Image 1: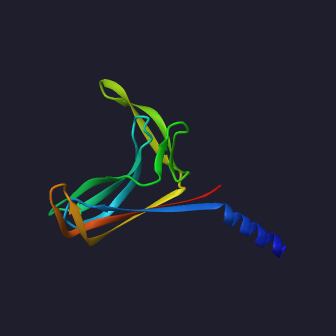
Image 2: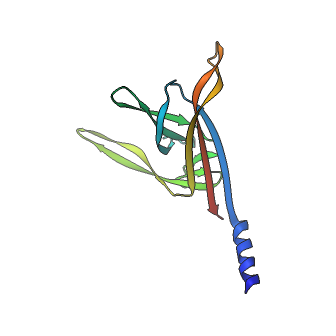
Amino acid sequence: MRFVTILSFLSFSFLAVGSDSLESIILKSKNRPLRIVNIEYHVDKSDLGRAWVALDVIYNDFDSYIYKTVRTRVTGLKHDFEYNEVLFNDVVCAQTKKVWQRRFLRKPIEVIKISPTGNCHAQATFSKKHVTIDEGFDVTKEYRYVVDLKISSSAIK
């Protein structure tokens, strides 16, 4: 019995597939962000197969909060139009569906609704780092806040 249990555990562990991707995003604002609120997948409406991740970052103003959306491409993240899926290294992270959104006194528009599957997990942290910024004309080194986005996937094949 013990041999069967060990054999089944070993075969199950060999079938588990996992991969990680780490992206660093330099924030344009020099202010310290309070936190990262939301991480979402986005896709393009054409048949190019592009997919990216959008982060909602909150900054503290004197009397209110400022929300800014930061978009970044992640290596290995793509949109498969044939099967309506967002894939990260052949693991399904989200399902996509084209729906018509109604608008008051105007023609409806076609939007893509994205539903995460739970196979991919995104974690974002920010820190202050000394980075090199190349604007095309000048190269400067200064301290900026950098968001480290880690996307990991684990699925059973």
